[in-house]
Figure: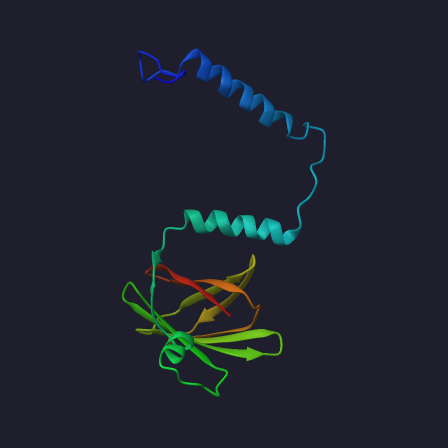
Length: 168
């Protein structure tokens, strides 16, 4: 039996309440006073925090990676002279094909959503969001996406699809 047990399991013991109160007091002591200006965080930290919050609270279907040329080519022991990378995701009623091409500042992501639908595509790398429209033919282009791990979303009238993370 622990120090915090109580005959009535629905109610915290006096010791639990006292410990919780001490933890709250310690946490409150670290907050700035009402008239004190808190230190500002760098914009990238703020954007990253927003991204994490949105990510954890997003009601989106997770798409499944069905093809990645960088994995398939290495498994087949094929050396490709092309700098292009092709990845395909499947989620909901859609298939999303993305072609990743190195450009001067990062990568260019060109893609197609099948069946054709309009909407938006968003790629977030290191807290920086890159967005672009999906036209009526289901095609999209996002230029100058930073190198790093990408979290991508496809938003259409029928909902949002969260693509699995991939590195560019």
